[in-house]
Image 1 (cartoon, rainbow, N blue to C red):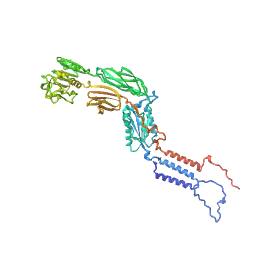
Image 2: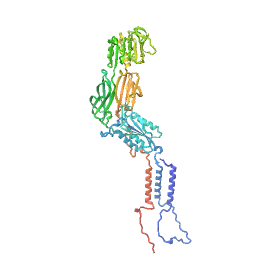
Image 3: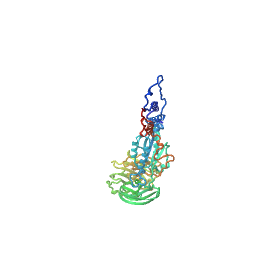
Image 4: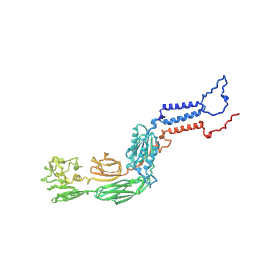
Length: 636
């Protein structure tokens, strides 16, 4: 127990003064009345002392006791008596408000009210709890989805906290409950005051991964304001488009759906590309089950692919998804060779390559292609762009030739160059090769015991690049080696990496994204604006986080995945609060109200006690209590 406005000494001094005055007044005669008596009573008999009457006792002790009690109650009200001490009068509470994507769902039994969402109910519950918090306590609001974000500081002004509650909106990610509660506990431990309640407001929908590893911190007072979200909902989980391996003008599309409700549901999935219908599928979804629907989209042009789910339900955010399909490009290759049959099979194996083979006699320098291959041929004028020189003539070398050798030994490949990626074979049977005398600007790609046999450099005009092979991989026994198609594939990918990159386009939910990668390859995570996002490579997967809807490109070696993070991140299971915690809006006798302000009640009680004393013992009684006596007439 403690006084906020007065110290104990000040209270006792004030009460002592008031009590002393009251007792002194009660020792006096309080009751005076008019009475007609004989004048002879005022004469004193000679020789006899006049009688003296002393009032040495309180005539009305109950009246004095009531006045002292009333004054004590008023002084306690002025001193602002609090039970539990000053620290007990101020505790720090953390309100964790669920702002996950699921909070945008319509309330049960109100499908036609667009403004009646789970978020509205959460706001109402949070405000009701806030009204029960004692005025001296501080409150901090944390908005919880995939991240825990403090929204206010430690506030005693309830208007600031209420404003932050009303401004809370559903996000795009799912709830990470354990992280949010641990963050709230850390804030409470560092506040410097006694810990109050940690309150979670929401339906408690979490992912399977969190449910399997849920770890709640030890909280002195944990309250859950549960929200009823018994809602039947079916939605899109992901939409993935992958370029066909057999046809460059075809996309294979896979749509995955899920039923989050407790009853079976039949849905229709429709697919549009560039506002043109591409097909529809009817799916029967069991409770809590998933189904997939596959489509084929024929288009080489870029466009927007849209997937819709019908019928619409209480949560419409996961009934629509869209992603942008890139243009399906190909690499134009012009080959000048007098032995077309030797090189044609290697180029015809990939549908992304559009090859044209011409004899050397029809060479034209003005041809603009993605790649020009000169097979045992050096023209008088170098072609524009990138050029692959295969065993150029010894009498017209592009790079000075040191010597010509047959069946070279000690073959080795450069391990850190894209043109030799995956090439490790040392027993490749090369029929004949030129040994180059490279310059300072030449990069060695392959060499034998006597010197380099494969180089790359930049053209003298700076407008193209050269790859020079001193041997012919399509001649002799080497054409049957596995290294030959791999070497040609590396050259094609070097000339046009965007064309030969394995591109997957998919739409899924925002939040934490994980993409598997093969081996130790360079990784880039970029947004549409070209901004690099932070990422982590762990357990052969690239992991990054996007809290808001965005379009992100993940480039890992020769593969590229484009994520349209437009779907809301959804839950898997419902969290069950532990037993023994506080639940619901605090009642009048709840432990949260332990330090309610008592001074108004003390003031009212004191006033009532004084009023009762005055009514019973005051000088001027109420009219209904007065007794009117007839006036006594003096006898003659």
